[in-house]
Image 1 (cartoon, rainbow, N blue to C red):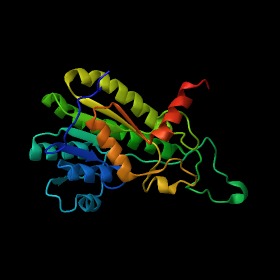
Image 2 (image 1 turned 60 degrees about the vertical axis):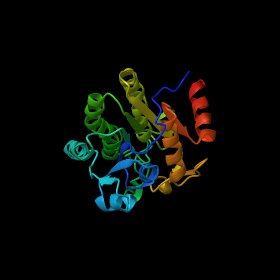
Image 3 (image 1 turned 120 degrees about the horizontal axis):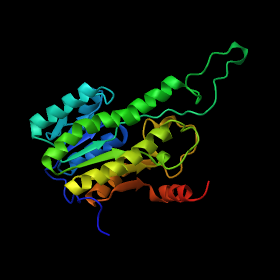
Image 4 (image 1 turned 180 degrees about the vertical axis):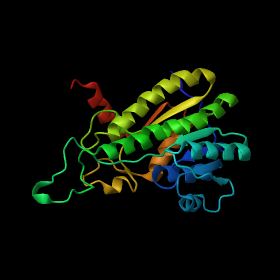
Length: 260
């Protein structure tokens, strides 16, 4: 009945790698890790945004990458290894969201299709899977050998409560996040006996540039800073699944247990 993962009692001096650190939860996590005394490698596509997040911290390392580009992910991992010899905690926060429903575009009366309409679009569906699922696999491919060589450390994967149960307008987004939940559960079974932690992070609604596009009321909306704090506190406590805010996520967990 103890912690499912080795607790990270103190972040001071730890080597962290945050993938998806340019804005939102990832940027907030990177800032808070730096504030807690960790050395942090910041990765995302846009170097200028990463520099803004790093600020004047001397313990920040900029390692740009694109999660859909295997070579760039591997290059970033090599940069961190050369600088620090490895890392203690890698967090894969990168992801994207596009609303989608099983509806076809309305082309009545010769009107042009609204590209932002939440209708079925195979190209956008494939892109969601490419970033949210395949992008995570690309990152794990670079992270896993380092952790296995060390025989220590941990990997955190940010999924979503949208992976719990089918939700409106989340036709492909939810499916990609459900796959990550299953992946993290199985990854935990393989790595925990080897002393390596696996952390599954399932946020609810967090105020980020992605959620700001939503045109509906978001229950229990929380700030990126609060989400980052909940994430790092959960890792420090050795939790496996870190979900928040509890007043929202617990209701979704209950719905998942009820009959259809």
